[in-house]
Image (cartoon, rainbow, N blue to C red; front, side, top):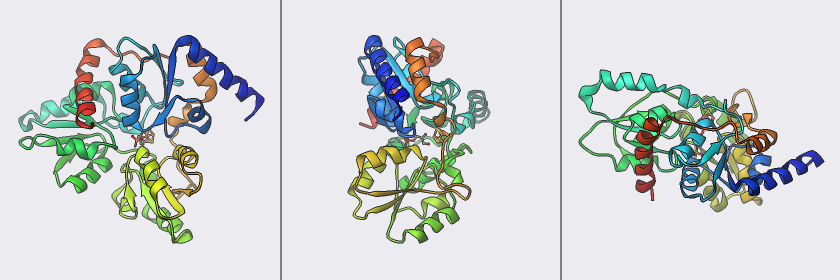
Length: 312
Ligand code: 13P
Ligand code: SF4
């Protein structure tokens, strides 16, 4: 670590105490951000931590919908994120007005709407319950039997949950631009290089890739899976930031990034917009802040709280 980044880390820690702030970071953040965070985890763990924190300020190192989720459950707290433009292709694939129109056009269906947490506050406000990759199976299993399910916005996670639960759902045709870059060929090739390796993949991957995996799970469950795996080599088919978290938690394992057809690993350009400098600046300036119109926030909170209750 350079002298400048040591100074920056010290200043971040000082500002954090001064502001009574907590730093929450997603598993896909860069290593330097993960190392300065109070908690690093998946969307579900982050949602629980955001709900339970006693801090006055939440600094959310992740993408915008994650910081927005923290604000939905903490209307009285200041929630900042290092880069306000850190979006998500899944969120973009299901704009609130488009879902609103779809539900109006199909009102006769009386859909039970399950929204993957990777969506805007507007979409959350339109749904019945939220889920993450860590609890999607549990949430779908608890859905009412007498209503058809509309699952938004990730068709790949939705298809995987259908396989796991046997429950038929109508799927919004969104996808994560990072996870669909992994292909059957790219994963087959790396498996040939490491014939003894196990493969763990995120459920946002396509079915062709999931079929090559020994385990499909959320980023947090990958930590437990890798710790307990009976082999040394594990191919990790998800965003590259996960490797930092896994190498810290499982130093004895050989953790191999899943390649795409073009690159040796896959980066989410949105997650990587956050830097240590921007983290410092947002703590210092308490900006950019997440703000949500109160009526929308209140409508989005109910399905989020239902998720937290149902996934305990
Ligand atoms: P997890 O909740 O599994 O960490 O996934 C979040 C995400 O954005 C995956 O691309
Ligand atoms: Fe969104 Fe994909 Fe990036 Fe996750 S990896 S934040 S789903 S674009």
